Image (cartoon, rainbow, N blue to C red; front, side, top):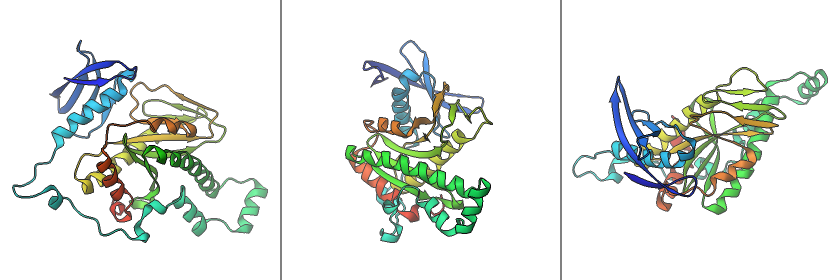
Length: 295
């Protein structure tokens, strides 16, 4: 039985039980009366919150139990430091902390963007192009990056445009007392956004796979950080919508945090997940370009 502080300031005791059946292996977080308020898949580490009121309690308790289950057993005589793979010394060329918000998109526009004549023709014909999408994405990442940079005074590290394999990147990575957050920015100027459990619709359009892709991105981040850190690193996916006229979240089991750009400040007071030493270790790995080469 673990006691945690509830979202409403009181105390709630959550009992964690393990359930294996029909090929599933899960940990359930239950209230004292047996009501399930969340569960975790032991195999994937995914956590599902069933009652929003107890979201933080559920994540904290289940993350704790998942860590105990997955704690590696090292061969006799082998220290944790010896078993953990090491990165080469950090050089200025490999230091991602120098990246500005939208660095990858900025490089893409510099290398493959349109020339002056192409830009003029596109404007005259009012013809949308892929370049317009890149510019809009860059503007969105700059705005969100500016908001995230404000969190540094609260003990958080922020990285931008972390390059992964296959020419994709993590828009922003936030590392601090409340854990690690993999942040995906979506710029939909003057549009209304609807968010369900597994789908996002912009102006009532076709469902976009933002939720699924954010979860997948967070798992890639977990694999890299835990590979080099040698201890469990909880990573939560975050979707930040920029410039929208309305953001409606109707999900009941949403596994991704959803904000507008000014709302990311809500992450600042989160704590109790990583120690000061762990924060610095995670940051030292995350800022190293060579850690992400095969992610």
